[in-house]
Image 1 (tube, rainbow, N blue to C red):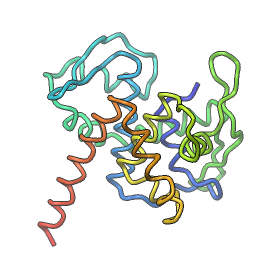
Image 2: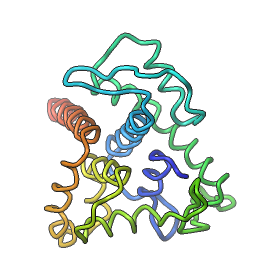
Image 3: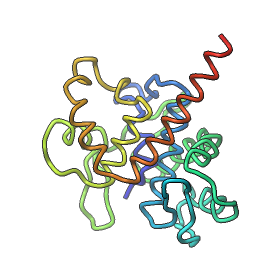
Length: 215
């Protein structure tokens, strides 16, 4: 089964050409950081309240994309979610590289020789029960274009994609306008997602204010 970090990376990959969609640097890094923290929360290793992100269980997950952050949370004093979004985002490039390596090892992607591009080898992913899981972009669009009850992990991905502006890069203006009410509906379904979205919004506004102050 692919993790949220791996699927976030796939969401950012173009279907054709194997390059990443054009999004602001902060968007790429905070989406990956948010995916790490959401995955740890989903695995019952961390939790959040109105003020803090805190450790629940320091048992390693066995996932190299998650366990370094889990160890840091375990060793650190209690901090808020915004702190951890910013902290993990500092390592986002390394986490993305590791996620790409994992996707190649699992046979989902292949790296083209002499080019920093990745090509899809399969559009369906095996899961632990032997069934297959549809490619992330197709799943999310099926959720946004219908009234089906979404899988909780797809809700998390939609929360991340919305908070980090990824849908603006993936969809046309008309398509985005069409699905925006559904995005707003879905993002209210997940408390963890709401916490991460608020933290990402706080960081984004702080970055925008700092940037404006230097213009």
